[in-house]
Image 1 (tube, rainbow, N blue to C red):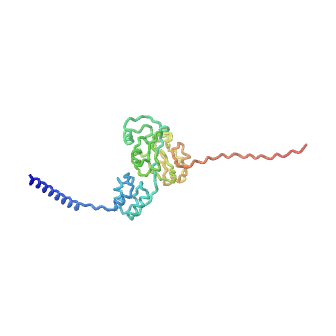
Image 2 (image 1 turned 90 degrees about the horizontal axis):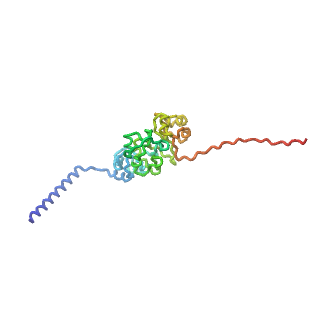
Image 3 (image 1 turned 180 degrees about the vertical axis):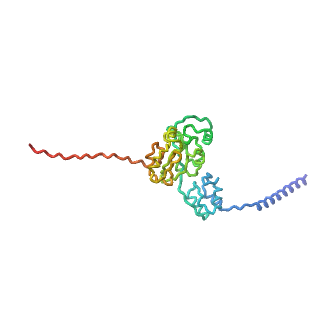
Length: 295
């Protein structure tokens, strides 16, 4: 009995030693060298794993930064210029600074201006709704209101407004990751430059129907009248498929287009109140009365 136990122990020990030797040889033969800079760069990145940089996660983005000779076109929107400067110093590679951007919802079709014409009873998801029907209103281009963008945002920078039924972006929390842009099946969310004081001017409509049809579906829809195009001094506005678009690269925020838009589809944010021009009161000159001579 003792001999059988001893033999079993010796056999198991021998098998363990052989297995260890095999694992050692295999690990050496198939060893993959990893540049220690990858871990160092990954530590510098914010760790959001939001895919805003174009990579599936911060680890893969760090690998791309280390392996690329030129990283001028690589950028982490969450970390911004501050993080990319640290990465540049760690790798000894030059980066190109980028202006901060913020998500903008290009639809203002609340229930008040875009009445419902049907009621959907299925799962509340914009992705599903966009596949099976055109929405609960006559506008086939506006927000579906099911909040896929809010769910996609990992930074709590968006919420659904209960009164309007539209998503709202919290500018101070927005990291420009672009997850909401990807999640929206209608493509109504756009990343636009974040100016000082978050000043923005953009067309809050994507309806490409002709004027009468668009306005019937939503009273603040762009009707393609081209008045904004005609008045823009910097040629920052283009018309395409009955729809105006303001190019932020050329827009100087003069607000002239806002004044002429007949449907108020052009949105301006965070501008100071306009000065009300006071009407000039006509000055009536009163001639002095000359004393009459005594009769």
